[in-house]
Amino acid sequence: MIERAQARRSSGYLVNLHGPGYAAAERLGLVPALAPRDIGFFTSVLVHADGREKFRIPAAVTEAAVGTRALSLFRGDLESALYEAVADRVDIRFGTTVQAVVQTSGEVVVTLSDGTHLRSTLLVGADGVHSRVRELVFGAEPDYFVDLGHMVGAFPLGSAPEHVPEGLGATFIGPGRTAAVMNLGPERSSAFFAYRCPDTGAELALGAAPALTRAFEDLRGGVADTLRQLQSHPDTAYFDSVGQIVMDRWSHDRVVLLGDAAWCVTVFAGYGAALALDGADRLGAALAAHGADIPAALDTWETALRPEVQKRQALARRGISRFAPPSRAQVLAGELMLRAIQLPGIRGLVRRSIQRANN
Image 1 (cartoon, helix red, strand yellow):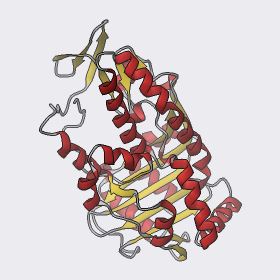
Image 2 (cartoon, rainbow, N blue to C red; image 1 turned 120 degrees about the vertical axis):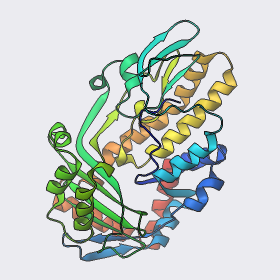
Image 3 (tube, rainbow, N blue to C red; image 1 turned 30 degrees about the vertical axis):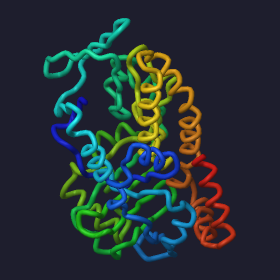
């Protein structure tokens, strides 16, 4: 395993595993390690720009809609469980990147940044939306990256936000933007931001703290708390433009892409970690089933998985309006929907809709 970071990155924001993602965690034997780290369901509070409460969505409502086969985890907790499962069986090289890839009929030769060469029957590029492996084997990122015209920022909070009671998540939704702050106590709290942006390149050049502050500095309450923390620790943030990776094929001979490197459904789908875990598990199963016939394994895997990826990408594109409603009218319409799901009859419809999406 080649990891470009200098050391493990056991921090990050929330990820959700449900549907196929939860099933993959079960098949991989990860649930016993993940279950104690599950933060469960929590009450969500929709707030005004000044931090005053509009209304609440109790944890029981979300649980009834999603079901019990679900895990809400910090990215770092998922990373820790995965690391602990393989650390004594896998050679993990930190601070290393792939510099060149050469394929022959029977193997792939990889040149690393430290000058060493590795030979293998298969190279899996699971190196994210800005994949170096994809660039080397399939071509430049602009050939596959579909910019959705939005920015996203997420980061853990070293101290609990002062204006959000513990155990709650406070969310502001306004035209073109969303800000969410979750308070689970010190070192267990986090913030999430998404906003519409006509020039994502300029925002990236500006950097996380200045860009997010400019986009959300008018908000008070928990958002103001988190922005102050970000300014003190700007390097803790994940900050990037929102875009999908769209490819006609995820493999080329003995190189295959996985997760965001191959398909990136984006945060607007709310399914990235689940789909990455499910995709990885399915890939392992296909390779095991086909033995030495790697091309057949990759074909079988992609044929089975591609419809799910396409569905999730389409859901993400439609879901943009939930995170960045185009108008105040759509903000109000979204609030009405959130209020309505608390009604028993509507709650059942939502639960069945989620079940259909997961199947």
